[in-house]
Length: 429
Ligand code: 4AD
Ligand code: MG
Image (cartoon, rainbow, N blue to C red; front, side):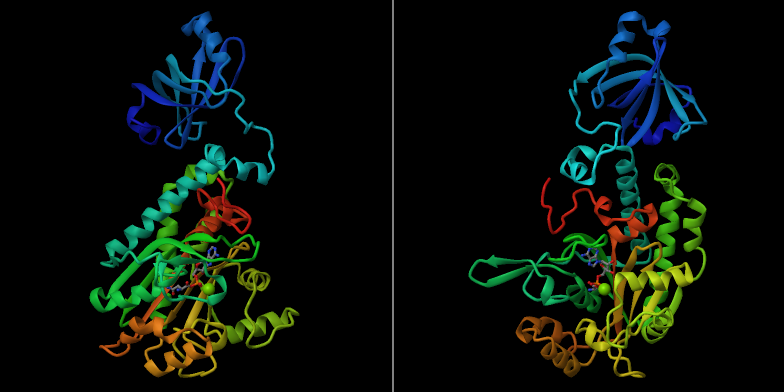
């Protein structure tokens, strides 16, 4: 039995192991905030029932002492879980002296230095429980639609996205290996075998920027579909984000309340259509708002915020200029300066959560773009082969998991959305 299945134990006696999250009360009754399985329940300890000696032992319990309890589960509609436990017996498993994270406020640096302990705190429990649910819903969404999971390599010989943000390592006699910036190029090979494929794993970018939305190691879900065009790709992304987010919200009401999220407002994002505008339209909107931006410039975080505030909704920005996007994106036949792509920008300052595109099918155009980007053509032999042997139109996208978690949880920074954040200035713990 664990606290996640407490509803099956109403009015029954239970035994549980866990930790003292907190304890308060008076000389007659003490209330332990007891943690098990990422959930917290109130345990009611009455002196009259337990006797003087046991009661005093309980009253002096330290934060994070590990304990075993037995008692009766009863309804308590005012509590987060809807239940509390009336204590019969309590045994100390191991003590916890001077636990460093107390209920008072601590600064972010202190908390991140103690991340190995901080993950036990109430808000952090909620965030990582939501991450767990979201990861499950992501896998379920694609499994249910006959997509095949392809685990792409982490150590790679070719540059997936951009040369500027690579982690390099020596690889025996072969030379340099790079930590994968994307699984996409390998996913593209797999559509020829399985048509509809995805990968979901850690991704590495040596981002030299200290922003609220960049990690050097983050989790990306990437999807690739054969015989699929840019518009099909957008429709899939919209259905996917809405389906997994609503399912996660439904399963995470308690956690979202702990995080102080306005659940109705959050749900409303996923119950109405996402906005779709072109990059050219985005530039016009930004110029009207007084921004000094012209065609060819990237839309930075601040400007993404201006766009989503305009619509108070997630916004697809389509057809970016060719030269500011990756080499594999398909040239737009109706506007040759642009590509058939879209970024999905989330509101509330979260910014780009998805980047995706239709893929260039032309062998020669890919060669031209690789040359323009000064990428070594030899490392792309396997990729270029795909354009020689039965090429088909195809499209795909990548979702940054931590950014979607930040949106759902209403967090200003992605660093709390992953158990152990890797940032420019942080590798420990
Ligand atoms: O836009 P990106 O770079 O696209 C790709 O990597 C494509 N290969 C995806 C594909 O088409 N298969 O990255 C995709 C998403 C971004 O929209 C963002 O959400 C997230 O990955 N992301 C990061 N998240 C946290 N920290 C970083 N440093 C990130 N870089 C990208
Ligand atoms: Mg991008």
